[in-house]
Image 1 (tube, helix red, strand yellow):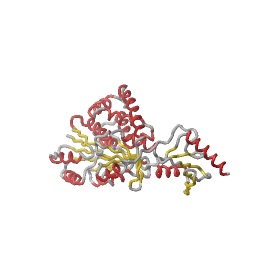
Image 2 (image 1 turned 90 degrees about the horizontal axis):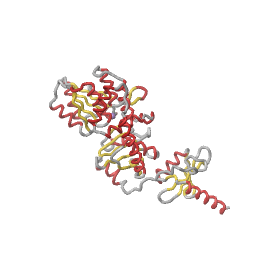
Image 3 (image 1 turned 30 degrees about the vertical axis):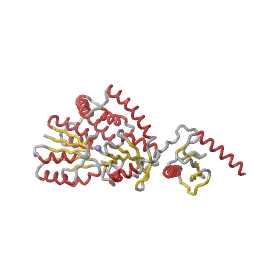
Image 4 (image 1 turned 90 degrees about the vertical axis):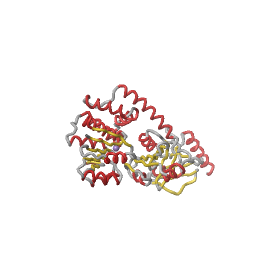
Length: 396
Ligand SMILES: [Mn+2]
């Protein structure tokens, strides 16, 4: 008999699907949240059965279970923990630990891709094109590679996962992988996925108008409340507000805090670590502890949301050699303009500010971080330029 304890997200359930194809009725699978895994491991070890093999995938155990699992293994118990989170790398010190974050050339792994390779190498599962394609979609989704590759099938697979129950998802996918040569969505799935895309788009548009910014521990966080679509939201908000170091997503009902970043020089697993959580450099999470609540909820609650940059402008555009006009909530105007071919300066309500910036991006970042300023609409910009001309004439 086999026992699989896996994570309850797409990557975790991908492992469950592989196990069910490999072992059929010989495996019992249970999906867990990050916090419920340890209890399940204890339950397994209490009635530790040397005839059954325990697989743990996409999750890692606490120190106590780490010791218990080692004792179980030393007593000839069968256990394998397969994970790709760098916070679990220390488990490689054990024979039963198999934690790989990336393989050659920086290709990131997922639990499903590691488990697939393991099952195939152990001759427990026969590789097929359909399974390999399914595994790769999950890997790309879980590692965000889908975005760079514009592999929207990967994103849609995750959307489908959340649209139906885990049981339905498993059944549909297992049948498909067993019978089809290639992995694809059927007509009905395509239809509901299209509807879902539209819904996500509207949701994100609303959240863009709710986000607030706050400096916490030297980094700029964009804070937003959301119960769902965390990955899509983290990604889109990060793109809309690149001056923010990361996006913090508060799930009040779940008492969780999620962190996402698209910046290579920011590691949000470190941010989560400060509040007892963990995860990847680009995506992490923690419980909404008292301290996290104070930082992200109490301090942020009274802040005004960020304003989006005007995006249909023809004249007041970014990086313009004429300059770009910004405004803050106090109605202060900021005119960011080049002073030569390498340097940018800012006028605050027509008065020169001292600092010089080596790029437009740096100047804009300063404005957005310090004043939460936004690019104003064309009509406002044209009035500003007219006033500016009048003032100059008058001063002559
Ligand atoms: Mn994963």
